[in-house]
Image (cartoon, rainbow over all chains, first blue to last red; front, side, top):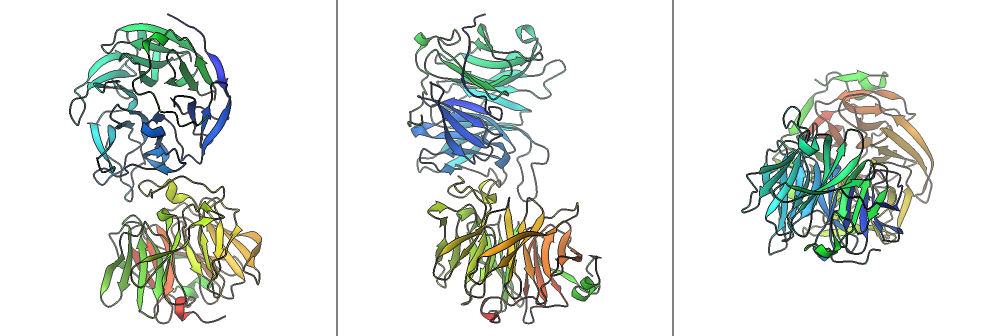
Length: 305
Length: 303
């Protein structure tokens, strides 16, 4: 176990942190309860990046300074453009709409993967929802138009997800009806064709080292392909586990209580946020040594800070 | 036969028990903006999710008039008989030109892009009044080219014939349907989120004041304060829970005309202006009433 300590970077904000992402110079944080997204510089100074953010929760950096955003209330993934606009790459899929996008990641090819949780009452005759939960993917054609396809169909309770840096695998936490005594499981889906899978199980809540870990709320992949998993115990404590693509745990970092989301910054730097509305920063993190280099999908800095 | 809930005697004079509610269009998705074109003898209405403005001729039926429509919402007619469109997802108010082109009349306030114009009317002096909530920016599946909200307010605006735009009021959560009293001395605006009708006195310059809650809608049935119109006696008809709620000019609830689908808007039509056209989530109904509505477009009677 290692714990280099987290320092407060910004907050408390008036609402929980919905999601974090690193844009190369500052960390972006969504505040769904305040319906806005802020940009936080490393000195803690905060600028409002977006007001009226349509309930944006999870964030992920795309190419060209774009920020992709889960907007579960509007049942879509939107793109916060560098020029201030917000666009919706694709809305309908086979005549239906997503249910409730929960988490997303952008792969090396610029495709946007997101988990779509079924929600009671989401569907209506006017705005029918896709049946069941799934993982969907947005991808653009050469002409620049986007389409939305189903990458993993009928996966109960999909939550946090992350794509391997080399696009070889999708990691997905599912946390619903796994089986008695198992509150969640981390799945690894090989990516080869249009669809991902079949999956292998890397970890399960309630078993082994995760016996006390009741939920996993966020994932990230490291430059070498390892996976960072943010989990919380029933007592409220939280930690990040680092594991290999095969599921072997190599490190653990304690987090401020009630942390729910994370973002990797510059090499050796980790940001976490949570229900208390605080954003914390850890430098020289044992989780991710500076010598490991930059994530291959490190963001292009659009000078937001 | 139409079902109604009578609150005051006045409703039976407006909508007798013998009145028949007839469907004229069904199988559609989110109809809105019914507007009767007297010179053409037809009804125009929008189908928001279906992305179409329809033309319905009593003799030949329904045909698509404008498709795609940019998820157009409320419709009105100007004095020349042109359709004035609350462009909703396209974030503007536009006029349908004879050649099929769209002339954008308003798309910003003081240089800031509008939210999503929802409903529109034309006043006697040719001014265009419209509501501008942000609903299309976050309604699933209805996104236009840009879904970022820029304005801090969700307001009601007046565009004068010379193009000057004035923010009349912004004390709303979600301004929606609107209409003027027969003498245009009172402006009524539905606030969907708050479930109420707000009234304003209109001054000689077209500005508004004396904002007040005119009526709070009641009912648990599907339906909301969405679209509204007045008849020639000044009675106000607004969509609401369970159907069309009818209010006397002094705000008394006269009753409710029950509609077997979630209502969205209404408009008077036919040669005598005594047919009420009611749009719903899935279609359009017509209902003959005892009191005519206000003529619109080129049929408007100068005040």
